[in-house]
Image (tube, rainbow, N blue to C red):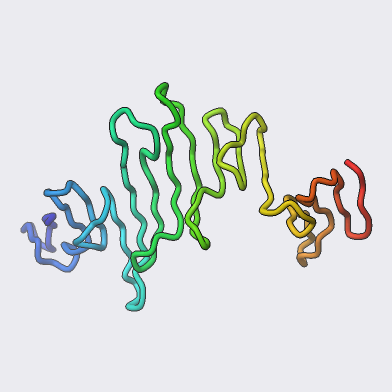
Length: 174
């Protein structure tokens, strides 16, 4: 428990605010809004009685290994639905940033590589400053869409590999 000053000059750990901040000395974890922090820092919002929104910070590096070294974790009622992870890529401490979301699977949806390249739909943006990959190889998947305020497509690039961009009424060869 963390001690708080009351309205006088006394230290107390029984005031209402004392339960808002909790130090787990055994696991070296800090809880804000929770007395059972799951990670190094767990912040919970119990503003409603039906759900618990949680933001957590987890440092996970195992010395000398590649992989995630820290994550910002977004959860609701214990179910993680998104993370932002710093990933060590090699022994010379190159790193990347992975934006991960939960759909039918939990996966990296966007990556910023150590070279500054951005990949959307790929975890390896290779040598392109921006690499966007569609989810299919047919004309049902648009890689890029430009729409007006009402949502009507004005221009689109599809994933079918025909090297054309599509306007609202025609197609043009790239």
